[in-house]
Image (cartoon, rainbow, N blue to C red; front, side, top):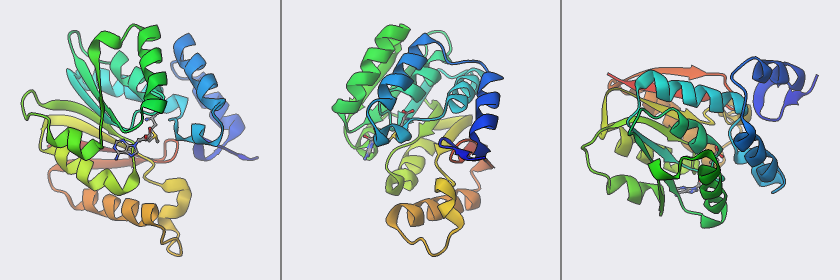
Length: 220
Ligand SMILES: C[S@@+](CC[C@H](N)C(=O)[O-])C[C@H]1O[C@@H](n2cnc3c(N)ncnc32)[C@H](O)[C@@H]1O
């Protein structure tokens, strides 16, 4: 059985089963996934549906009042995260592309979330460095350029409350993470990032085989 294109080591059939047995994507997310899919190969950047359900649940579990996302693309993860915000909470989305995020803006309107999401178009590091330390970040999702992960993590963790959570996508990188013959820039950056997080005493860490690998870091 062939692997699901969105879930490492999981067959397409098993993936369909597990998606069908979690909270399902609604009409907004289904429309967004279909429209993004029509963009071609680039659609692979979108998170998997079970990750979306997980992000909504994580936001609710931490009682998120401030969420920061680095890497918004056409908006799937941001819709899922913003839906988990506590009453009165808000979300800051960082991306460099208006071409992609125009689609996200449309999805936020459709989902009735525009009033709580603030889109910042600039390199993620710049946006994060300009954020105040108060109010603290409750939840962050890192899913942008892989060579920037370490910088995003550091800028976020210093602005995060104790008990806050950073979720990091693509940490298994299609399995290349353990293929030492792969020395491409992104793979090397992700390997260094995974090692750095493991050694960071400020957090508890778990790496999950969800989609392309998802690391959760809880600030102590
Ligand atoms: C993997 S996609 C994000 C997918 C998104 N989370 C979703 O659920 O659809 C990566 C995004 O990071 C953005 N990006 C690339 N370099 C960036 C940077 N330096 N700062 C902020 N965003 C960046 C890209 O424009 C792209 O939209």
